[in-house]
Image (cartoon, rainbow, N blue to C red; front, side, top):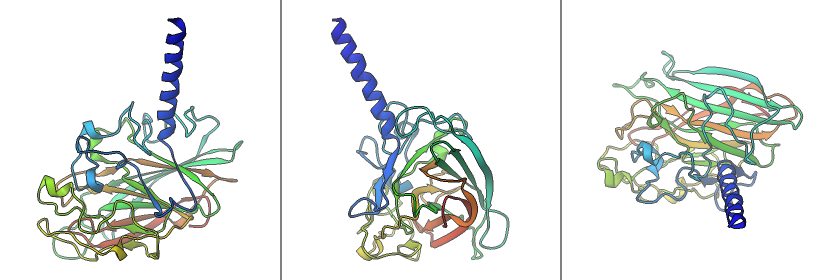
Length: 325
């Protein structure tokens, strides 16, 4: 009986360790075979735990990752966004890391008016192992971002961190810091890509719950990796809630680019689909670094990919980077 109990304890410890490690995803410089992208929150979701459809389908608190789950890319939350997560990619506590840079950056308004939000930008470095962890968290405000008639709120569908061309494989994760509540005001990371291109994703329609759960015609959760190198790829005009979303396979594409890591999310003060996720989760990139990252123009790229009644837009701002953005 004692031997059986011991074996069960060992198996349980290994299971917990495997779950912890699963929270960090290795993102190869060459991408993931036929796609530059891999699923994060979407991985393994079923009708009982809907994938959220990149923010178009509302997800409640019970469907968010939590302690004990093995959601790809998700890791246990730190107490605040200013702290590293409890466990690294090996499932052990971070040691030897010190904060070398931390700033909250304003997101400029394309109209020249008041700031439309902020980006929390921070990095830690272990000078012994020459490893850095860069953290990003977006907060969007209720501020008009377009000179057109009416109010158009900028929707961050992708955050691209740049400067990793010499890093080889990197590790990524995301977390919901405990000091921000409720959890449903924060967008999870739906997928991550080693690419410069942010690819539009649309639900079939955004008028009913059933339609919000379905992909639009020809829209892919994981884009192909054939030829598209532009900043954003998708249909250029917005659609109404009752219009069937449709695109071509040519827009659902993004070539691999090792210099960039693209986090697909859905952060906007008030969404066209009726949801509200003014904050993103905190997204982390762990990568080799022989020196502290430096502030460089264009290291952070915010993309609006026209998920519903919105157009394709991009805002590039200064951020910490290991290499040239």
